Image (cartoon, rainbow, N blue to C red; front, side, top):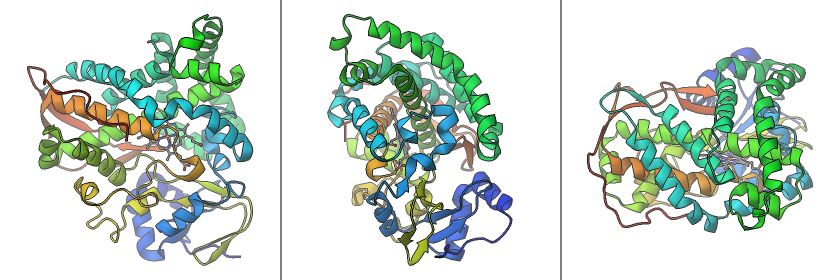
Length: 431
Ligand code: HEM
């Protein structure tokens, strides 16, 4: 049994390289060691990064009893709770995933369209013009509002403030250090305290919903989960926190990256504003390719595993590297260029475009996220005539928990249109 090659320096240095500049760092490692690389992250089992789509396919279609994603996501346990679908493995995971899928089916998306369109238009109308706007903060408020309306069917300001406070804590650099380097007990204690208010409010909401005689006729996600499954309250709370946390910061970050890129690519922005749906879709895909919100997905090996000519021992993690796959010259010529047209020329491949991971663990909210991105970008393109960068230099990345956000929060300067656009509805599809 052998570990593939990789840097031999101190583990702390490797950890810093990964945390501070994951994109350039992993590309440097690829240039030196190839497509299968061992990385040592402090206090974690070794990671084997995979940058070849054939290896990614092998992992995504492999045996989930050998490739444990839930265990790989353990860093999220203090935040999401042990019953979160993201933390489960094996039959427990499959069962729970099946219960949670119906509200996220493609055909359900149209039901969310009007709501998303209205909230997005209202939000964009409030954006200040002619001054630097940190878009991630605005898109985050917007996507939180949207996911809360989708889950609960109505606004709840107390819960919104509590979720904001929770994610503000999670996004602090010190919290990432605590998650990576702190022990299990310290993490459980700290996160238990910051989650307490969210849990209390969710328990109240669930109790009220259980007593609601109209429950069966409601079509918000909470009602669908309560009426369609026999999930107990503790599990429901973990899943709601999962949907609230996984379901808005990721999409908000992707939207901020789209604006950061578009502001520096006036031709792409101009073409987007012409209203062609396929181009809108291509902008979303190219943004998620070039600036993936999550750089890689982790599978903990429960048995020795043959991959790329190596037999990797149990206890090591294999990590399909989203960033490495997305920056392959042979699949994406001129890979660091932002060029949405590439997705008009060739469709996104199952194992070559992987911002949502894959296999039985593929993001449950992928359709929802893409649908939301398209509607929000459309609302922005309809309302904003001019989009300019604050500085000509592209923004680097910063970690916010496990997500990679624009370092200056996607700052742009917008000029709004004075009269609303009249467009035939609806525009984006649930593709
Ligand atoms: C642009 C936005 C998003 C990105 C980039 C993203 C990315 C991801 C990734 C990479 C995974 C792990 C997949 C794997 O291990 O193979 C994941 C899982 C998951 N995501 Fe998302 N996500 C986004 C939006 C959402 C939304 C909107 C929701 C829900 C409303 C959501 C809910 C989930 C859940 C529940 C899982 C766990 C699936 C499982 O373990 O079976 N995500 N997401």
